[in-house]
Image 1 (spheres, one colour):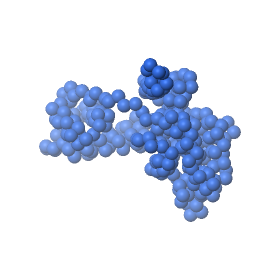
Image 2: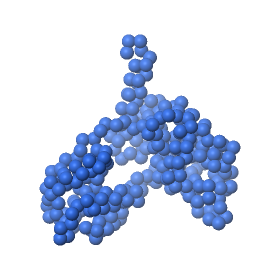
Image 3: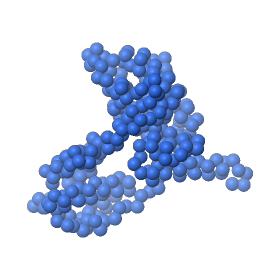
Image 4: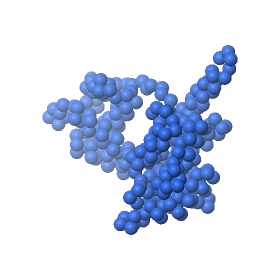
Length: 295
């Protein structure tokens, strides 16, 4: 199976243009199944009973329905690939249904919480100013953390107030940047960033730098967000992605067309964006219940 796993990942990367994060997720999910499954004579056959036992094991291990559904999807994609390559006979694994998903709405922040978060960094320090620029950009554009850390100095066009990002599946999109975010980005780029560069490392071209002058990582952005959100809010489960959710929710609350929000977020399907309409409805209900005397 290990040999075919390598070929499958090459297929995803070269023919499906899968991102490094997607490839890593497939690799982890498939190797987990490989480690769980008893190997008998190198056979690649798989039946629905065995697959159901595996899903039951995942459930007992405490995995959420969403995670189990993702792992099942990875296995199905792999099995279909093996069938096309002629090394897996037709099995009845397709009879296993996807677990019904919990309808958990994305975690977002109210605008007052966002304001407090954005104002939390100490802009009197180089790193504090960098942190403010990061938070402003995440909220202004709704980009993913992975998109932010992959930015280089050419991604941002300060005169046009535009940002070019490479999204999932290596799909490029051009985004407008709000005037407040532009102010912080310009000062960071032209005043702060040169001071964070390290003579030992040199200028590698990445937009956001860590304290040592190297490229800022996903983990670094998450640490920055957690540091400031704990100062200003008791909201449980908030992550940097919450700013993306807040960006979309606040746009829709302000009357933006859902198709425009879809384009800004880089969603392939409108159904992915529609989850934010549920958030705005929940917000309306919450305001109604708290404000109407006979609610």
